[in-house]
Image 1 (tube, helix red, strand yellow):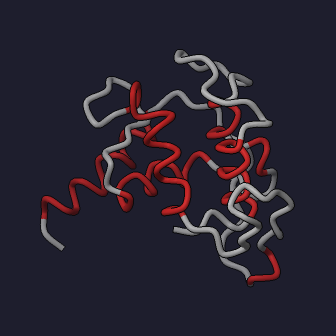
Image 2 (tube, helix red, strand yellow):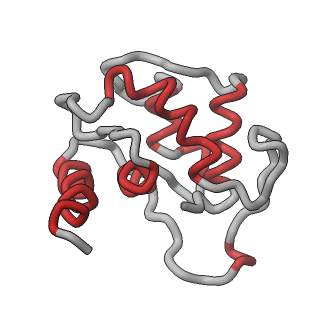
Length: 138
């Protein structure tokens, strides 16, 4: 791994760790597929194998206007799915998906300078929720 690639991966993690986010309960570590909740929404067409690539375009569309690579916020989307996953994965709560910081801030349920970018009834919200419920796979 080159230094540049390592820096692109580590910098978002460092910035996220220094952010002032309200975090939910930690996600379960390890375990088996039995520990992964079955999606109850159809935001990703009911796909229990939903992956980050399914929702990355949603996050770019809804969030990158304020949280782009040059933003002054701790949560930055670069457009690179691997780097963005490293940032977004820290904002999900597998034990209580609807309590995930990613969903709550996006819905305006937690303090968020940009206001709400979706509601619980939006297709994009449901797609992100389904991804989290499926295990927030990369």
